[in-house]
Image (tube, rainbow, N blue to C red; front, top):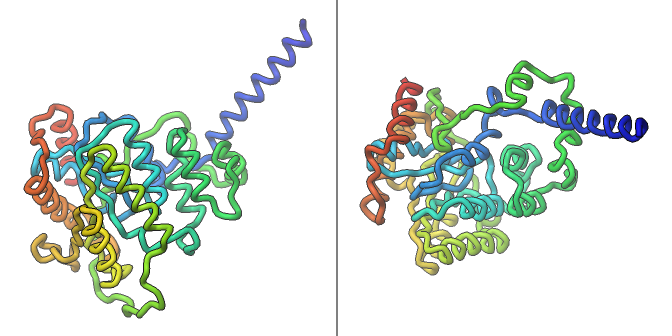
Length: 333
């Protein structure tokens, strides 16, 4: 009996230590590289959003749900992540629909330019999207779809297999957020107040091939069909970034797809003057993404566009959102 108790005690201690170090060594994404924490913040939010954005940094940097709420009373959430690829967007949308069925899904089509053989597919970006997802069939599928040759499935199940060498890189952040988390976004919008205006852009070089891959079209079809099956209006957008270039050939393909599949598409770069974006002050990185002032202008414009063209409820006065809006305004001051 004593031997059994000793063995059980040793096993329990081992498991507790394994859990502790597994959590300690995994990056926390709280004070540094905060983009890695955004995907998980959705889970503890009220699930009553009428508009859900999916896509890459061009959604989480450019669209502020708090501004959309203040402007038109829209309840929206941005389920964006860095370099979110189209197959990842599809799985994140599938996961979202387990929690709620929005009226509108807004998908930023920038990721159509990348397939699974693209150099933009990397473990670093995979981790920012996947590490903090809850376990589900969608997480399993997104890992299998996204893994590079050097990655293993088990390293996602047990992060210590990937991050075991971080022991000499640990900071106060790793201990402070060992068991707790904080929100770095407001409904998925990552605030950036910095200003770095556009002074010059790389030469717009011609490409050997502009055609989106069949693989990307297959996932766009899956997103379209998933929305249709759930009676959701799919809205395709291209955020108004100056770089990387969104070629006319890209734009034409998406317009043709939208027409063929009866979905709406807005290339918001065509509305820059109407929105009032000034790239000398409204971007934080020389034209790739909008800063707070630029995102505010775009969010006001897009909220108005959605309210005019789609059947959305005006939730102004909602107690939870009013409190969020108050905190948001205090944060951006």
